[in-house]
Length: 298
Length: 323
Image (cartoon, rainbow over all chains, first blue to last red; front, side):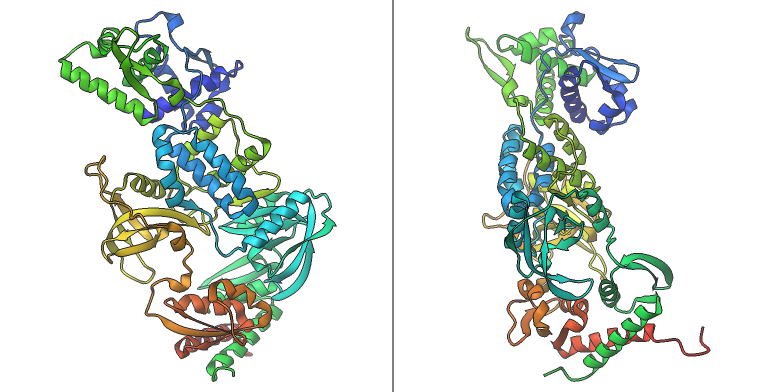
């Protein structure tokens, strides 16, 4: 392990462990410090004599292992962790950056970022302005700020929203009223989940406005919805496809989303079944092949 | 003496002393500073000071009340002050951190975990929103961190970049900025090969080396008027794939709003714009299916006809007698 990393670890772990008279488990502390349990044990052995050189036991930091726990009995003024390093500050700013999309949360997130920068080392604070403007995460210009603001306001006021929404799975635009239960960002794209756990892509709202209707209390598991979005598991039923020469079963595709997916793969994917969906794809493709084989429409 | 122990002892001595500690006193206290020529001991001490400065500890040198000069550790400048967060702020940090830590390509994840521990915060989902960076396997955190370091120290980078369907090219790049958009990391900088500012997808960089010569001296300046956000928000329509070509696409009025941000305002139901990336337009038209018709250029219509003919052939009912 590198010297700066071990210095930073010691300076963090002494006040952290000292604040917990019951000690901290080696595994938990090693995980927190991104090192192995054995590495942590070795580090503790190396720093067992830190304090006043040639000083007596009461002039040393008293750090020891007892079973699978670490204890600190004497801190010798190592009572606060060091300020944020350049890497720590960069990581915090980058992690918070995707929230800059949300008009209401943006201010709160920016104010928090400012407070965190004030906790950084001098070098990190000096670099912060350049990093904030040149190292950026998560902004997605495709999402309408007005729609995002409306959704944030609806969540805060616990009110319903209504607007025109394009449902790609059905290839249809319709009026929707929904009770927002949470916002999700997946792959840089924002979604809103409603109380019935339906998920809507923010960029597919043509319009959206707050209503006077109160949103019913919702108990929506956003983490689970996010995981479903990450795995693209929404709507439809399992289908069998051939991708190049390999046959695979693909879970949960809404009908129109399946057709779009096949179109976008430009003939590399063949739907093996069911037959009715296969026929629909064949008919649509034949119709469009004919359209593009003719002169453009007037 | 183990250098780690010596450095920590030095911190201890300088933060507990009641008055600045002269170098002569440090030489008496530390056996490691006691042997050798004055110059070599001084160099050793300067290296130790630099190591402590590297992790953000602030050592100051000044006169004490009796006019004797010495060193002391500025605890306020070195250590975190008391800090508390509201419930809402904890939710913001927790959710943002959970998304970052779940993304193996996120740079400085170890540092983020330590920062969270310092704040007494934990990663987790808030009640009102959640985040996910996506495309987690396409990038290595090491390359994002290396570019972040090059960006901070303004060091030139030699990289090997491969465009799909092309041979890789070697390039020298002055990195001006890094951004994450829709789950993909990009580096922006002055490309010495093309002599212009270019954007590169990190997923297409096969290898990379930061100039290690003169680490303390920057290799370039970032132009005062450089702004990353316009480059981040460049539509794929503007990616330099070929010469600019005019495009016309008719889109059903009901779904035309989906394309207005990228393609402008339609007239009579037809979007007219130019692009240097026709393949992207074809993808967009394919996504819209029957809802759109690409009217021109003819070359793109021919490609669409061929694509649909292939899909139709692949899904045509099997003739009797064929397996």
